[in-house]
Image 1 (spheres, one colour):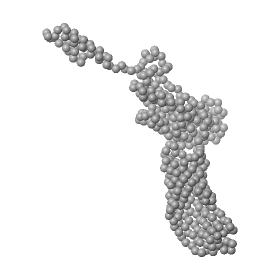
Image 2 (cartoon, rainbow, N blue to C red; image 1 turned 30 degrees about the vertical axis):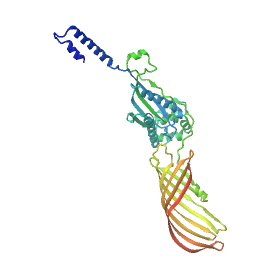
Image 3 (spheres, rainbow, N blue to C red; image 1 turned 60 degrees about the vertical axis):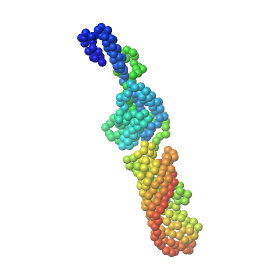
Image 4 (tube, rainbow, N blue to C red; image 1 turned 180 degrees about the vertical axis):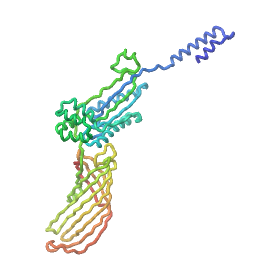
Length: 417
């Protein structure tokens, strides 16, 4: 448009008079003003960054907002993200999330724990605030030995120099943790209580642009450059608070309450295994062994069984050992003597089958389990009659029998040992 009017002004024609040229010049100036006015001002932006530590309880990867001051930090994160969403000239530059764990326990377990903590914060940012997961860069550190070294070096803990030699040594991480646990017993208790809770966290780093001047900048600095030094939000080091210590169980001991009602003493032992603890193996023993009325009545059963289970929700973040739905395959075998008024049956049996059930937590170390099993049962039996005060058994006949259908039912109380 500007070049068009410049062309008009340079036309040499007798028909063009001064009024036409003046109007053309005014129109040209008007459009020049419009061009200047319509050009958007380049906004001044300031590069900022924020760093947060979100803490986790021992052996736990779930986000607890009230743990060690997390609520304050989460509120501050929400304020930053909400302010960026409200201002069109603000944007995220980078997200970094890194998970850490403390050195107690096996390194292989802590690797999974650090990865799960990192993923928990990434999922939280994605689902809670709608952050694009592609801009969140993730990493994890299996065991936070570097910060432990720093904390011990700044402390007045007894035998500090010996601890530092172990921490800074080139040994395997599991070997270092074992040396500290067994050779620095009193100090290890202090580490568990006061140091290790400060090592279980996920660091979140946010780089973003903002049009607002950082609070610690003055006007002269604002004129100096459009991108000012970073305004860093200081990481809050919350006080360690006392919470119930999470357990690292080894085995589960169970009792079938239905068998108890049938006056059948029983015990079960179960252990989980697998990458996600999705498998378990269980041994069960049942042994009611009673006689009364001068041995004319007997209730004697001895049974031993083994069962392999697969837990369907083991990969869930909220999964607890031996909880949720499961399917299993079992086999059991035993012998029996069932007598009433000097007439009874003795024999042996075995049974393979399948089980299905569900278990849930009722306490810190307690679960409840409900299951039912069905399968095939085979038994050899011998019918007898007791004579001479039941001191002599007269065999009447024997046989072999089969059965297919429900074979097991359970309402069990589970103790995590």
